[in-house]
Length: 272
Image (cartoon, rainbow, N blue to C red; front, side, top):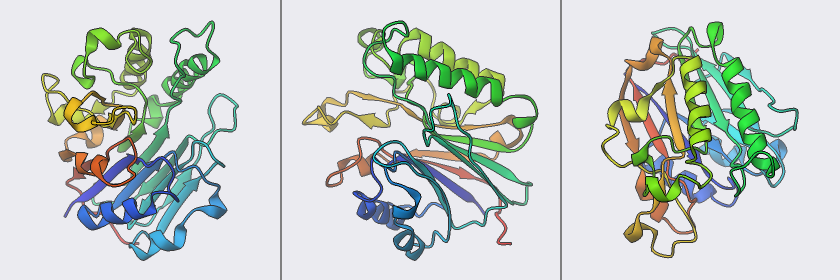
């Protein structure tokens, strides 16, 4: 038995509900973590998603901006929402599911993009991003990560040289600047998180999960970045047996600019 978990910045769940349906038809993950859902909880397309088999929904919505949601065939034993930076943004939700390896907590994050100027002194959005990462570092350590935990989401940082199409040209571009990469490493190291994508795909290989809408022929130019991540604590990391970046979804009609990433865990989930 396996548990499959997918993460996907959907860029408006109501506008792209048909794409969610297509993804479910193609890959049918047990748990689907969405970011940038862009709607309030009472406007979330719950009925349509329950028809797909996602009977368990954990939603942290926000009108027009942000928003995260975790859709699941697996019952939740707990749901937690955490606010960051005292801004009221809907950027995190966590669920816990029961498995034969014990409870697994699954964090779903949408880290701020950070604007265009990588200078916290002149760009409040970039300062917000760094502050957000600092709060993640302070929280996600010790008892919080000394357990079976998975962290997924659009972290809006491509940390390795081969996570971007040109390391040299993007060093001063938000999402790949040294200060962001360093801050993300602090989050990862504080909780001893294992980067499951790079645990299965060597850093010598190029991996992207985002391609800009500004490129009319994104597939040919392939100027992408790996902004989406799946991490695991050491307690459960060895159970992540496969990773897939589902690039096919980026080519669908009116797509999100992100592609889903799927992790397969060799655990058996329990239907309570």
